[in-house]
Image (cartoon, rainbow, N blue to C red; front, top):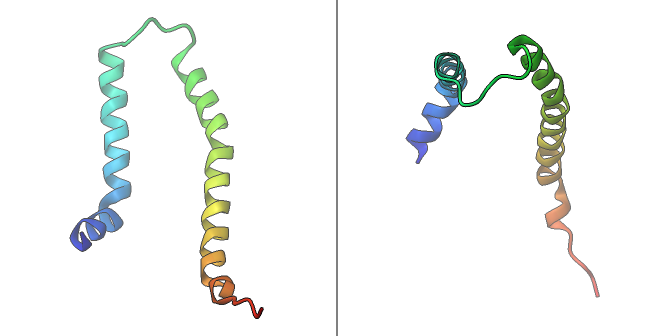
Length: 79
């Protein structure tokens, strides 16, 4: 498991970028459905829509790390 984590930590981003490019090229050659909008217009719209998701993910990642590093779990009730 540690080996898989190491591979994804070191090569995960290039693998995902490469996979995205390959799938984009394949979809260009073999369309799944008829295009209604221009391809670049659709890419821009998808990018704009994805920005809040990335921001939300980054904020949650930061808050989650700080939350679990805090002494919240060390709290004890003195009843």
